[in-house]
Image (tube, rainbow, N blue to C red; front, side, top):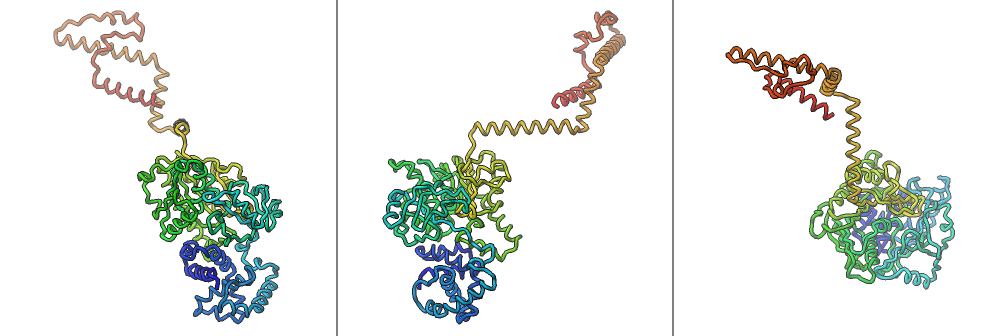
Length: 568
């Protein structure tokens, strides 16, 4: 019996028990995992249809509760016979029993299609599971072990034909001439990712010797974008916050090595983190097999618990964040997110997505605490605005020392226009771009000059807002100051006359006091000329006299009002 069937049955049992498909997958055989993973997703898609078929066949006893372990194995193998490759791999008792019932199984499938009024098998599926887009097979050349030129030569030696034209996915798949012209034995280079080869849909390379020896990696095109956008420099220290299973990590390592092909001693380094034990073991194993163990250091740690001032990591210049997400952009073969969510209500589904978004925000905020970080790339395989544009908008509103770089400017599809700068982020549509649904944003630290300009602008905006509010709404104290200003402007002469009157009154009081004490009052030159002197002329002696308590109180009140008026 083929190992992939057993692995797929094990995964289905765990998923139906409430576990996540991706987390469950890392405990199985690495060699059969890709095939088992695809079989699991497809069998779960067709689960209700397969059960209907088995109920009207001699195999119906396998659906009973007592045979729950063998049930999933039968479903997986019947799926491969009816909806998959049309045959069953391996040998054994289960295969023999299924093949004996092959005619009955095909007859029941035909009756289901007639009853539903459809011609194709996939049309029996609910609309959300129907997969009509046929993606090409993307293959990234591992330049840590070989070169793109050598890999092309090896495929040509195996009978493939290399097309010199570059593959572009900027056109809608129905209008793309390349989609129709890429024949079953033709491949080409991608126009956006330098070392990415493009093969026809359905090309199975899992057993290729180039895959087994680590010379090529089966990696989707959109999954290569984060590393391309981060664009690591030769001496950079990079942190990969959520690294397993390691495709993006190994891609970063290859790009670092390419920056210094003649001086490997000057290469930068990568610290890759994953909190899960099995995932970190798989990550370390993949880095060894792909030839990047001398560049990548694997840590089984939670990135959120790493101190930005830790001497081992404090000098990191770039951080890649590809966190857990809803996976709603993966419409090709990884449909576990639909299986996981199909029984959830809309409210619980939105709340789960918001929980993902809160976790994603916490990772980005933590990354921005690194004192030397210059670039942070954030990516998801989600189509949800909550996990993508809303996360980016929230980060920008709370971290003014970072801004968005214009990621992949030649890529047509940009972010949803819900905030200023949404045209700087990248979106990939699974249905329109012939690649997995994806989202990438690149945060860069602002220069000192840019920060000063932003600060000046913020201060200017605050001043303008304050002036506008002061002009539109006046408090009782403001009105009191305005009244004082108005009285002062309307009675300048009256004010000085009042001063003269007070001074004359003070002088008369002073004379009377001296007479009572038996002293002769001295003549006041200014007083003898009071009839001819201007109203605003005062003697220096009268200005220096000691003010009474009442006058001092009035003077203090006047000074306070004047000061308040000037401050406005």
